[in-house]
Image (cartoon, rainbow, N blue to C red; front, side, top):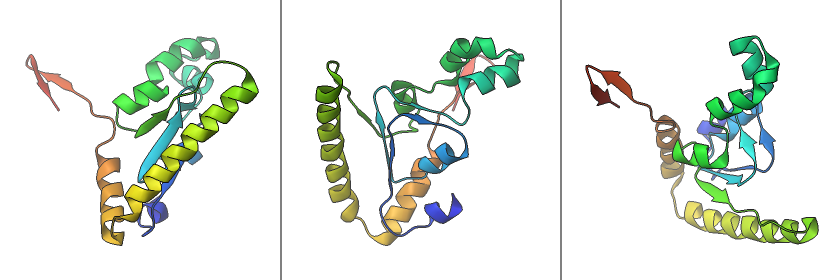
Length: 145
């Protein structure tokens, strides 16, 4: 991850199915992280999370909700940058539409990232990583960020 963070070239990460474990962490270091609408992305599977937290893997569905691993959740937490919509319908037709949407977004991101200097690429990756997952703490009835 440290090596990726210091690359002087644009890094675009794409979650297309299920991204989990250590490999998933590395994806978060990209200048841009794209995610298909129905994909999931986390550091651990819901079964593993439930097993560790509650000693009960059968609570995986509950764990998945707590983990916030959907594209919408992760977009709201600033872990990913863009959600690629996935159309409903026949598999072949849906695949073609999704592939076209993904290609369009990749080309857009390449164009935007190519306009940045090497230093801007590294700094924007650093700032993006630092700003992931805002949280609040209640302190004396007041929210602190």
